[in-house]
Image (tube, rainbow, N blue to C red; front, side):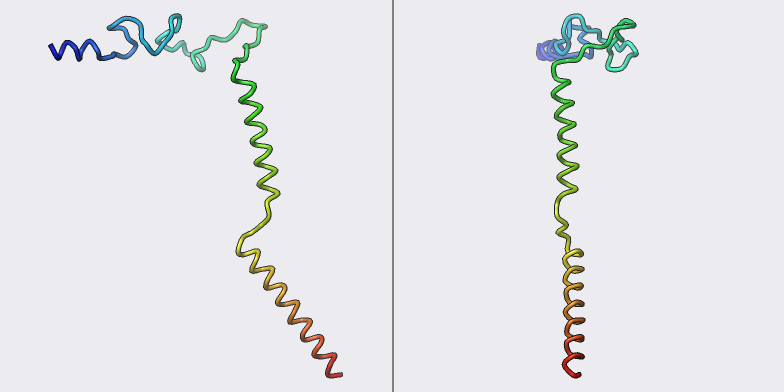
Length: 107
């Protein structure tokens, strides 16, 4: 009895054993046709109709790439190497000024 309940509740691939699959709508094929995304190409001379989600998705993706590209290129360089390089240049300038002021004082 338990086995019958379990077997009847098991789903087989494609839903062939117990009628239509609950994962596909009527009119959809279970086997691929050999085309990309299982869609048949439109007749020649006609273009494919866009789905509702495509335009907002493409616009959002493009704007995200632009904002990230501009934003990441415009951010300040806050690495420790850059900071240390600037401090070293400042120290060299101070030493150069000290040596120049020291040599002019002795004259």
